[in-house]
Length: 132
Image (cartoon, helix red, strand yellow):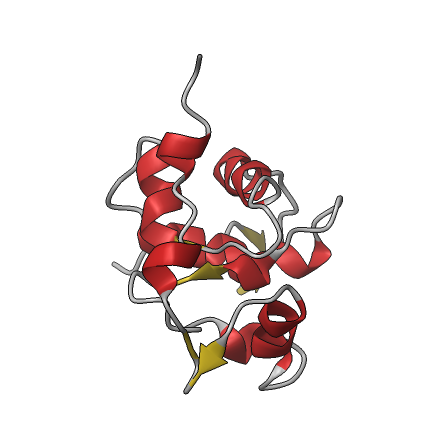
């Protein structure tokens, strides 16, 4: 028997998928962290996941960034890259160069879709947001 990934409404013989709009608190937590990344800095999906206590959820952070376009207040998703500084989420922006263009407008150098000197640009939420 196959499991359904979406809730469904049945009408005698037919199964109709239903879209459920819900607030995902993990996504909101990700957005709260990303909104704190200073201009001219960038972080990684994994660093955000680790800060949120879900070290193995870097992919979920990526899904959150993919959905960030409709979040309010706006989320600077262009500041989140993979662990090597690559603009792995660039295909989710309106144009193929928009992510790099936004980073460059903040003074971040990008070459071949990778942040130059990523180690110096890297913003670690675990260090930057530690209490005290």
